[in-house]
Length: 199
Image (cartoon, rainbow, N blue to C red; front, side):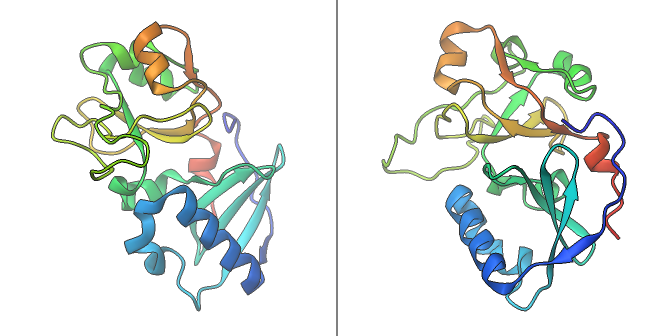
């Protein structure tokens, strides 16, 4: 989505009512952000929006990119926000062999997740069931993710997340099939959105 260089666009301040609705939307999509929401979006903060190509909007607070959305779809966190609060977002892990492809903007394929170095959710937290959502000791997300869910892509042997995007199929289906595209059009380290100056 952001393979090409993005030109800096003018920012516009958002009304407090829009900021409140964005805050609610963020918390409903990412409930684990709850403890950090006042740090991410302070009530007295001045959130700004920046129009990007392909009907995308980037939300910026004090020059820090926070999240973006395409049209009116679900808010996706900017990688800089993911790096600040890595445990607050659902994630999957790719093996070492898939890293260079993801960082060049290629579609993430299932074999990069189903191999020994990859990590798909364990599914120990059932839908609406007991237990805590998050990473377990084996670095697997504890809840299965559905098609269309936003997800952060971590990489084997690396501490920082390398991409964020939407799932093209359920994680359960990825485990069963073991082939096919899993995420395309992701925001990845080094892409146009990552390099965009928001000052």
